[in-house]
Image (cartoon, rainbow over all chains, first blue to last red; front, top):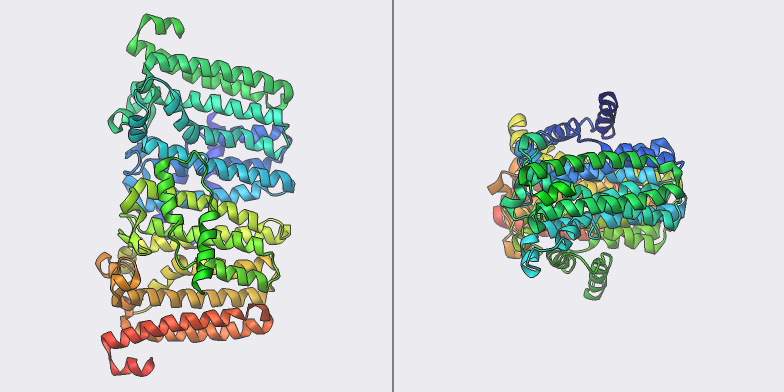
Length: 317
Length: 317
């Protein structure tokens, strides 16, 4: 994505949430900061292309894309709170609670959530009653106790889960957490346009599996970054996983094991994606996206090789 | 309401939020406690009668009634957090954050919010495209920065608002906070069934004004309780408004002034209600509800008279 394109998306990120004139000044200040400091905005871009691939209206793609971006941003505001990850920096700036107080961070996050549901409704309406109901149930499931919130609760209770499932020798616990925390929003980004666009059950299953492979891949890259990068490189508080006793696959099975798992997931995702594109050539853009994901994974694998440098890992990379 | 009726509603309060089998145990425990300790459940009862008055299906009334109850319960979980009201007791039991930790209280509240949006769209669907869109926009507005969240932000920032608007000699600041915090959910309870049932603009305006009068009445009664009642009587932490510097109309304009304002709002609400029932006889049940509200107001007025006993107030009561 070039700078001009990101600038235009960033402006939609701000404009999709107009604040009423009588918004309380502290809440307005917190929301202004959030809305003027977006992340990579990768979700609206993917949703736009998915909607095009399924012949759905571009206006609805903008609504869903930014709704998902607001849900994601709200989840970061909650995750960063002192009672959760207790982070201080995010997106290269102080966390909202660090600058505006915890109460205002919670209210700003709830405002984003409320706006996100509002945009979701607008997007889903008009796709036909059956698809609308399936889409809304899918959203409720993966944002709620069946997805994001369950993953976050497993995350903060990892200490006691871990005690019940020790020793830390496999990837099942960290991956079941990532299935809730990370995969849920990727599922909504990839599968929901398929549901709204009337994808076949076979397509929906492939979309779902690509979402799982990519979500777990992303989480491993993030876990490795937490261990290997400096705060300057990542733009947020790092090494939280060690200091907070939080789940991190590289801590659970070692850096080498995590890199191998990462490479395996990328290969599995590739196979699913190849089969999907045969069924629905309109989503072939996902193969370019996969190249970007691979480049980021390759960078962190290089980083792992430099830092840890076992001969077997360098061969694998 | 008799015990049997409350028992049946309490069971629907639990059953309307089925938890998936793999719900993380700490989150499940917190949600079980919330779902098994409902409040008065007055919202589902009013919504059921409003839906009947507008000829709308009873199943949809249950969805909206419990959705509003979950939104309300979630707002209490957030309000009670240490960074907001820092309360310890609610509904005759320890607050969720006091028993399960702040993080779990936040996740449980978000789960209630997510389930509430899910129930809301089930309820709203099928009322015709125009009414659906109006209803969903109304919900977004009054739950969000245009209502509940704005009121809560004004509430927690009352100290600085007050400094900018001193001296505390009128009811405008406390009432603008109550318009956000308290009136918003009453608006959704009374006006939303009207929107879904195709009420005329005149009816919707009267419903809106009744909601305002009742919401402000309820807030004054609550403010007076905070000052006059013991924790045993109210079932929650009391005298928070004085100790936390929070808005309370009786602290702003005195107990006598608050009682006079309360009586004035009840009379205004009565006038609106009489006009509404002429237009829509199906909502005449609201007049019985108003008698209950009046009984609670009378009790707190008696309490105020006993505690403060100025001759002028006894005459007014």
